[in-house]
Amino acid sequence: MTALTNSLATLPKRQPLAFLIFAAALWLGLYQLLLPLSEAAVAALPVARDSHLGGALQFFIYDTPKVLMLLTGVVFVMGMVNSYFTPERTRALLAGRSEGVANVMAASLGIVTPFCSCSAVPLFIGFVQAGVPLGVTFSFLISAPMVNEVALTLLFGLFGWQVALLYLGLGLSVAIVAGWTIGRLKMEAHLEDWVRDMPKTSAQFEDGGMTLADRLDGGFAAVRQIVGKVWPYILAGIAIGAGIHGYVPQDFMASFMGKDAWWSVPLAVLMGVPMYTNAAGIIPIVQALLAKGAALGTVLAFMMSVIALSLPEMIILRKVLKLRLIATFVGVVASGILIVGFVFNAVL
Image (tube, rainbow, N blue to C red; front, side, top):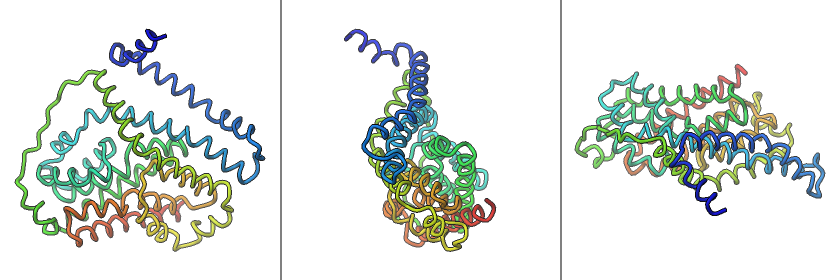
């Protein structure tokens, strides 16, 4: 038994390709079992399946392993992909580029680059030192947390490719246009003085010639770092979503966040800003809101504001930005999110 355990533990190093195939097959097999297992678990409990509590429990028991499995799988794969897109390489790709095309590149790179609110300041400083234009830097800072691989994969797994593709297009559009607008306003004077006075550095990177086994290690490290950090938010989000799913009447949610309430989109944005969570934590809540009759545009606006305009990130960015630039950033991004919400409520 010990020999078998040791053999499996060393498989990623000895046979990385065989490990990937085995892990993918195991993941797919377990994923297919989630729905029947959740129904069986609820059936074994002393509650009626069609009751409020039964519906909430089924939602929680099914969505918790589903979201965690989706998150673990995509974080592992993107941890491998991210070994090609280090922050140093990203700075080198964007340094010296003119605005416009560079905004598109920056927003696109944000999808595959590891980022969280705690790394906003060092990333921002590194970009400024490398000579990346301010508007291009903001396109990256908006895109990276909002249109990342976790959000897209969970949206795909829970809602299908149409909603995931819609969110990708909307998020990139907001990041590109907001960054370009901030760049046109020429607000470099509103960086904190110590940031503006920092010496410029050349943006270089070295390709270390990593092997597939090394990239697997990057995937494992990403799972430990990201999943290990966000799982409490996931459980909290699923618990809130389960409560909404089981207990909130559909008519109430439709009247509160439906298409007919014109004020629902700005209210959703205002509600989202003070919240502190990420895509993995907010998407289960989005799933429950949509199931209860909330409009897609309103829900997308709420989700985008939570991820892109969180108050904690603004507090962190205050270390490097003056208040006028922070207010401009919030105003431009919020305007883009509002347009997204209103347009999709009108069209869909």
